[in-house]
Amino acid sequence: MTRLLVGRALLLAVVAVATLGAAPPGGAVTEDQVRDVAANLRCVVCQSLSVADSPSETANQMRAIVRERLAAGETPDQVTAYFVEKYGTWILLAPPRRGFDLLVWVVPFAGLALGLVLAVLAMRRWRRRSAAAAPLASVDETTRARIRREMAELDS
Amino acid sequence: MTRHLRWLIPLAVLPLLVLLAYGFRTDPRALPSTLLGKPAAPFTLTTFAGTPLALESLRGRVVVVNFWASWCIPACYEEAPVLEKTWREYRDRGVTLVGINIQDKDEAARKFMSQFEFTFPNAADAGGRVAVEYGVYGVPETFFIDRAGRIRERKVGAVTDELVRAMVERLLAEKS
Image (cartoon, each protein chain N blue to C red):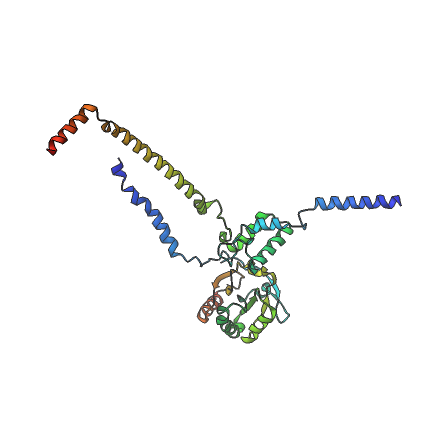
């Protein structure tokens, strides 16, 4: 009886260790893992929707393919690369950060930085200009009296 | 200094204009296949008639692979007679047509095939695996594979008699 119990416990331990060690290949692929890959893939029959978000049959089949490949032991990057090989970088919702596509990532920030620099330069110039114009605005009391007198003379 | 640089302002708009001119001229629906010139992905399917169909077994022949669906109206209906006609005319000259039915119901697909009296091999692509292997976006899509098993041309939308004839003749004329 005790021997049987010990034997069972041993068996359980062996099974537990085996499942822990061999988790990735052939193991359970979670919905989240599938979602992570599918969210970066463009649904080919939709407008601006990812494979993760589209309810279409095509997207459904593509999610199944993602799940299958992950279950077969491929990394998320390898699965993504498979779709890129078949569809080109078009399939990626975000363009890769290299080559010509890098422009898409860099240009907006470069534009923003350039705009900021230009705005700062312009504001400095305006300040300098108003600073230079300031002395003209202050007219002393004698001059002001004279202007008033001469204006009055003009009116009469 | 500022006076001198004023002409730079309209100049700065130029790259934007060039980009827009380029962008508006390209067709956003034109999707170039990355698979042109590459070996066609092998597949083994079971035809509606129940016989196995392997692309590998057709090496040495010119193969026209057509992805279709019975719900694809009207393009698939327009090209169906062209496909059957091509098969009847060219089957003895080294050309095989292969129809791959995607995302369809068995009954509807069979009705479509009998409506157009299809005699060339047709098979359903359960799970859409072959469609993804060929980077298919939608139906119909037609791939022309040369004798060496490379994808040489891809046509999105209904094929015409002239187009298929020209492609097939060109690939037949090549030495394998």
